[in-house]
Amino acid sequence: MKFVYDYEKNGELGKIQSVVLMSKSPRRRELLSFLNPVLSSIDIDERAIEDRYMDLYKNDDFLIRAGKTCCEIAKEKSSISNLEPSTLYISSDTMVIIDDKIYGKPKDLDQAKAMFMSYFSKSHHVITSVCLRSESYIDVFFTVAEVRFTDYYNSLDEVIDNYINENNVMDKAGAYGIQDLDPRLVSYICGDINTIIGLPVAELSKRIGDKI
Image (cartoon, rainbow, N blue to C red; front, side):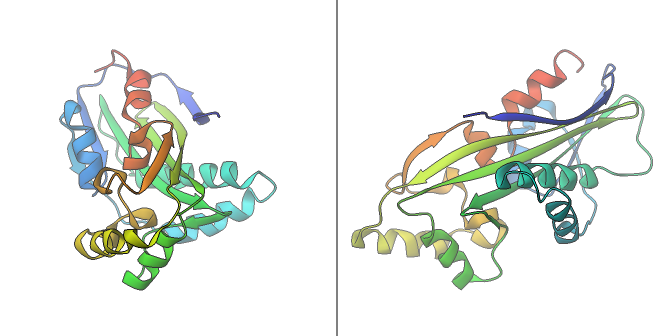
C-alpha cells in the first residue's frame, strides 16, 4: 500500500524563522507543538471546493480523487494575500473514506452514530493533506492510512454509545478520533497513526528538514 502522494511542488524552501499553523484543530496544534507555531485560520467554503474538485478529478480512482481534493482544501486554508518573509505556513485537511463516500464532520449525533456503525467488519481509509507554503515555495502532499474496525458484537453497544455521547464527535471527520477510541474497537491500522489524528508529522518534518 502506498502511503504518501505528492500533489504540487514549486520553488525552494529558504531558512524559516517562524511557523504559522493555519488551523483551529487542537489535535494539530498538539502534534505540531515541537515547532512552537503561531496559530491562525481563515474561513473557507470546504464543501464548495470539495464539489468542484471531486467533479474535476472524476476519472481518477476514488481514493486518489479524494486525496487531490483534500489537497485543494489544504491549499485554500493557507491562501492568505500577505505572506510574511521567512515564515512557513502550514495548513491541512482530513477526510475519512468508506465505500467511495467521504465522511466529513457529522451534522448531529444520529448521523455520527450511523457513520460509526458503518465501520464495523470492514476497512476504511483516512486521508490527510498538507500544504507547506512560504513567499517563494509551496509543497502539497497527502498521506493515506487504513483502519479496520473489529466485527460488531452486542457487548460493544455500551462502548459505542459511551463514545458517541461522551466525546466531541461533532468536531471530528468521520465522527471519531483514533486517539480517543476504546482499544476493543480497532483490529488494525496500516500507515501513520498521525494521518488519522490529523497531521502526518514524520513526513512533514522530513520535508522541512533543516530549514527551521
